[in-house]
Structures are given as structure tokens and as C-alpha cells.
Length: 193
Image (cartoon, rainbow, N blue to C red; front, side, top):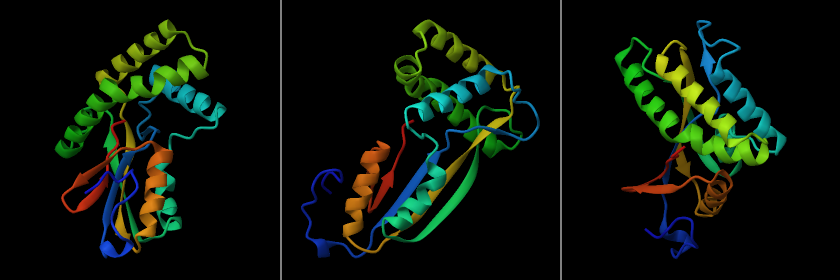
């Protein structure tokens, strides 16, 4: 298949079935057992992340709205599944513990720094030293497993009715800055955040 983000070389009648899967975690943490204190560095990071992103007109926690966007874009039979995504290895359930291990590695290894650096220093006016201190404190808190925090993973599955909707899909990718990967006969969004 050609690059889906480029002009398509296929005639409009080339496809009669396209399946799309979208999977992305929220930019929001929850806690059910009061182990996420108001004065934690992780909560401070999250509050600052929200404050700074909203101050420049950006919303990073977009995936609760994604199903509606897909419907508005012409997708049919949009199905939304919400799953718990623990941050850390604190869950007792083996599957959740493994999911939390991968999420922690991704969050601490890539996402937190990638999303924070420019936003905090260029937009929020933070010094690089202050940001690194905060990120190191968040890393320490998350690795301690004392906070039983989690996010939600949203999975959106469904069919496209018409070729024209692929144009809208390409626009959504551009707006959300999400890469598109191919998986056999499926088109699959994959976030590296």
C-alpha cells in the first residue's frame, strides 16, 4: 500500500471494506485508594502539564472524544472499549501488573520527557533544571509503586463506509500528529507517546 498520508493512487472504487483500530491512553491519572496525594510531584507534573497545555490552546487528553470524531467523520458502527492501564507494577492481577510494567517503561522512558520538555520550557517558562528535577522526582515516585495510579486505554474499532472518509482519517492523523502503520489488511493507528 502507498503511504496513507500522501495522495492516494487508488481509484475511489478500489476498496469495499477497511478496518481501523485506534489505541491510545489518556493524558490523565486516576486513583481509587487515596495513594495519589495532592502534594505528590506526579500530581504537580500532571496539573502543570494540563495548565500549560490549556494556556496555549492545546488539549492532550483527546481520546475520550475520539469515537465522536470518528462518527462525525463518516465512520459507521464505531465501537469504544475502555481498559484500565496501571502506571507501575503495583496491581496484584498478573495481566494488569504486566500492562503496568510496559506502561511505566513507556511513560518514564519516553513519553513524560517528550511531552514535557518543550511544553514546560518554551511555553510554561520553566528552566531546564527545574523541569529535570521535577521529572526525576516523578520517576522516583512512580518507580516506588506507592501510588496506585492508572490511566485508561481507549480502543476504537470499526468500518469505513466510503473511500472519502479516508481523506478525513488523514486529516485526523495530521491534527493529532499520530503515525500510521500498516498491519496486514488493517490500517492501525499506533501512538508512540
